[in-house]
Image (cartoon, rainbow, N blue to C red):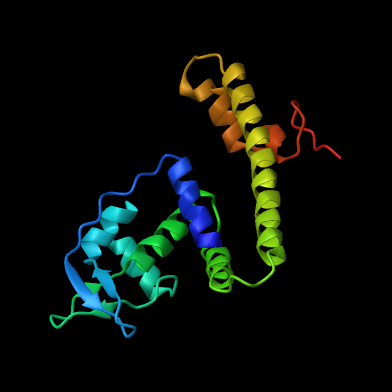
Length: 182
């Protein structure tokens, strides 16, 4: 199972649902096989995103330029649905556009060793864990500020006071008395 299929399967297990296929036209590719031709609106519905998002992903190269019909309208295949679903799922996991670009490039090479994908995912996990640690400290400081607030008037509000003076904030490396910590 390739990375694209794995992530699509992950979308289903995460509770995403895909709408029934709305075929708008039938085309025949160069090998003689029929392919579904979807409008940009149908693709947006199927991938549960906005049309503007699809255009943006095309503009930055995450989605390849689609075929166009005689009326110059974009026409998409099932591969576009899979690719867009992959992109959206990767964004849900917090991967950057550049990381998604790398993942897509790697997914286009199914015989490539998975080491590079693993390394990218491990680096992202480290970033997520660091962000969670910072958010945990921030949460604790917000709780402390709220507890210290006496509920009087704004002129005496501890929350306003701490936000106005970084020395009073433990989050920025100071103790409860405003002294710098080593």
